[in-house]
Length: 206
Ligand SMILES: NC(=O)c1ccc[n+]([C@@H]2O[C@H](COP(=O)([O-])OP(=O)(O)OC[C@H]3O[C@@H](n4cnc5c(N)ncnc54)[C@H](O)[C@@H]3O)[C@@H](O)[C@H]2O)c1
Image 1 (cartoon, rainbow, N blue to C red):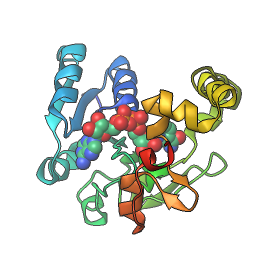
Image 2 (cartoon, helix red, strand yellow):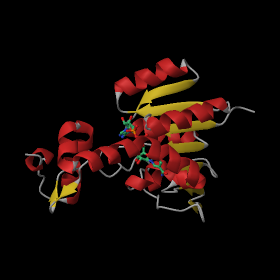
Image 3 (cartoon, protein in one colour):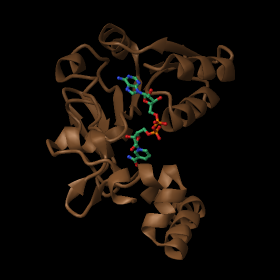
Image 4 (cartoon, rainbow, N blue to C red):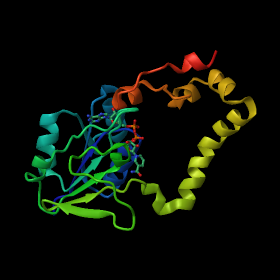
């Protein structure tokens, strides 16, 4: 038997770990990304155990036809995820192939995705199984809550200690996280996506 083909679209945190698992199970893994530095980093890490390719429409179109499993793990910060696998492409895929849309919490990166929960995680469109659970870590709620708190609690404590304005002034990453204040949208990509005027965070920090 030839190894199953796994296509990972988006080679960030999610894509890297998905690829790592698939490589560990002996699959034939390809990772697509649009950032050359990301591809280089992945290539150095996997040393040939996973292939990397620059992501564009033609490559996605070709690679989904061969895949048994496609994992959508793209992120365009602040914006809705781009629809990279279209409904028309499903008809070109192997019957019974599986699409996992991890980016569903950002709107999903497959045209036929809609958010599901662990209660009923999958559905089938044109013979292709879709898994689009918007909160996947909810499967291990206690562990994932501890993991999240370990990295977010220090920020919450800093805001509590200093007040939000001083905390954001002192830490650019916190300032980057402010989306809305006093009825103004302070995150440019969110403002653009939703058609609101953009007000820079700095305007509120004095
Ligand atoms: N459903 C869930 O439970 C769950 C859990 C964790 C993360 N997520 C979501 O998964 C997505 C990925 O998260 P992440 O932390 O890995 O983000 P990340 O920023 O680490 O990685 C995203 C990658 O996508 C790439 N990318 C952007 N546009 C692309 C395109 N057109 N083609 C190919 N690659 C493209 C970027 O270059 C980047 O390397 C996010 O939408 C996140 O919200 C969902």
